[in-house]
Image 1 (cartoon, rainbow, N blue to C red):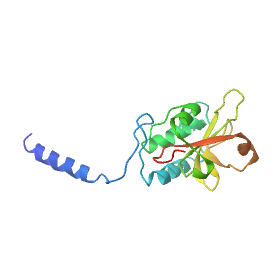
Image 2: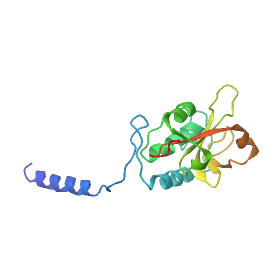
Image 3: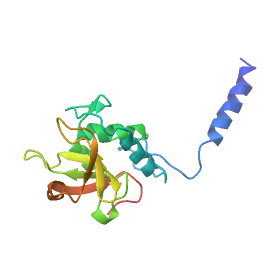
Length: 165
């Protein structure tokens, strides 16, 4: 044990020294947001990795996603815990205007007469987003300028520091 202790101290010191300074990460939607300048790009790349995965109602894994399950999974892969439902995701994020949207932010829609917030996607820039559309479809890109989405757009929210309206 005495011989293992110095090796353990050296290993822990090395690991701590490898943590990048000045960059943060958000551990939970409940604990406030932190920002890592590379986080937006990582979120978009992770979202793109799952293009083509089938829609599955209630799905939260690459075996099949629904819209909020997809968003939750992508963020979780990047160390960010989001709530499960579309409405909870909207409420948890900082509300942002259309001109403040950046890649990695979430965009919200009303596609149901029963629920105000019923669909979510991940904004990727150039007025495009990636989402799990509906039964019979696959995770794909859509355009915010498409008349269907434009008519149903409710707003955007960010989980990145300094994005609040």
